[in-house]
Structure formats: structure tokens, C-alpha cells
Image: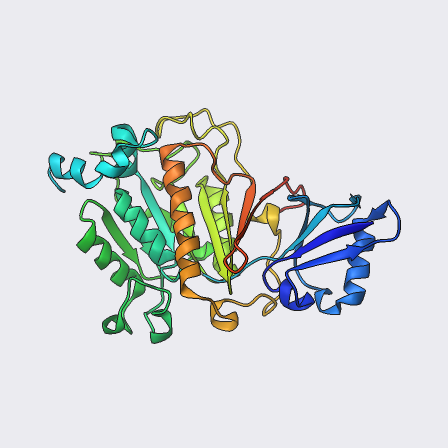
Length: 81
Length: 283
């Protein structure tokens, strides 16, 4: 299944893009597994502060499953003013 | 203060809106708003708040104008380099919008001085306070705070001080071509609150710690000086912040309560994220 990943702020530098289409094996992948796979491919994400939103709603990493077609946003805090 | 006819003439274009009218204009005149940070966000926010007829502004910034500020901090020119930003912004307000009382605190905003800033922000003006919207549970005569700062220490201090004092606040921040905006610590029944004697506060909306419970590590997230920013973005996002402030005072619908708005000026992607309450958030 495929999900759409959106990146904001300094995370766009970590993955060198604002949007990725991500292929996952089969259904029933947890958000935790997705993040682990993503950090393997893009190690600059590791240790960064961010929240994750699934389909425009912020979620907790644990206990969240992702489904085909989900839009998953990675949102860091911003500092500038 | 301008004569009544001039007053009506000055604000005619917004008085004609059903969301404003004479009642809304009085609410704007009675409102007291504290702006922390007179940089890229603070400049447009202060301009539009004063222009709309906000009655009292408190401008807080310890910084001085520098040449590298001028590409985005449009209240200042080269003749003001080295001068206090808060003083310079206050002078602009007095010159352009004499209906707005303005006071200045050349200071950082910290948890240590937050209560003192609230207490001394503005003397209560009894000629307008009867139509104010300062809400029960607030230990101050301030109605609203705008976070226009560029660092996490000030942002968390504003969050925690507002939670403690019961003051709503409007958050914004920018980086490169992106901005975030939200409205925090607002009574859910803000549209029903009639004045400072109101006691029927149901509960308050989320705050910044519900989104990001703790500041990131030192140096992890860059500010405008480190990562760069195009000045017009500060104009857009600071104006969004002013708009949310005016909507709160006018008690319109559609405030960014329990939501985080993000804007990307390169892609024009505008997203509103829903924020669930974070049970682990601790002040």
C-alpha cells in the first residue's frame, strides 16, 4: 500500500523534499514501523523533535495504524519571528 | 482622541461589516493587547491592530533595530538603527493611530517578569473598561497576548504565564517560506462572555505544550537569522496573527482554537491540523 508523507520546516532539509510517496508492505502497518523505515532511509530525521498528523489530525506514535492512501504529516516546532 | 465624526469616518469600511458594527468597534477600542516581539511578525501585527482601532497596546521587546532587520521589519528605517524596537513601534502607532494608547516595556519576556509585565502593562481606563472583554480568572486587565517572538524560551514563558494568569494568546512562527499560527488558552465559550464580571468560563482550549510539550534541544531548530526568511512571509503570517486577534475580540466564528494552521509560500499549501489534547503535557 502507498501513503503520502508531507514534511514541514527543518524536516524538509532532513529528507530533501516536502512530499514523498511511500510504499509499505501489506496492510496493517503501525505508524511506529513506518517511522522506523523512514528513519533508516533518511537518518537525519532521527532525534529530531516533531509531531505526526494522520489525515490532518495530530496523533500519538504508539497505537496508531496507517492505511493505504493516508496523508501523514511530520511537523516540527518553528522558532523564527 | 478623535471627535466622534472622525472616529466613524476612520473606521467606516469595517463598521459596515456585520461582524464589526458599532458594538464591535467599541469592543476593539476597549481591548488591551500585549505584543511580545517587535520583529518580522510584530511589525505587521501591530500595524493592523492599531489600524483597526485597538484601544490599548503594550509593546514588549528588549532589542534594538539593526540593518539586517529592515528587509522584513517594515516599521523601521535606517535612521532608527540602534534605537529600541518597542519605542520605535510605539512612535509609529502614536503617529498613525492616535486613538490607540500605547505603552512600552524594553524587556525580554520571562517567567520571572511575566506577572510584573501583566500587572504594569496598562493602567485601567475606566472610560472604556465597562465594555472590555477581560475574562474571569484573568489576573490582569489584558485581553490577549500575541507571541511574535523568535525563540523557544520566550514562547514557553508566554505559554506558561498565560496558562497561569488565564490569558488567551495567539501564536505564530516562521521559517524560510513557512509559517505556523494557532490560538491558545481561549475559553471555549468566548463568544458568550460579556465583560470582566463574567464567571461562566466552561474550560480553556489547548496550549502550546499540548502540541510540543518540551522545547527542542538547543540549536536543533533554527531561527530566521540562522535559516533565512523572505520578508513578505513575515508580513503574511503576522497579518494572519492580527486577524485572529481581531476575530477573538469581535467574537467571530472560525478561530484557530485546537487547530494549527500552516502556510507554505512556495507551494501555497495551507493546512489546518486538528490538535487533540495531550494528556502528558505538563506546565
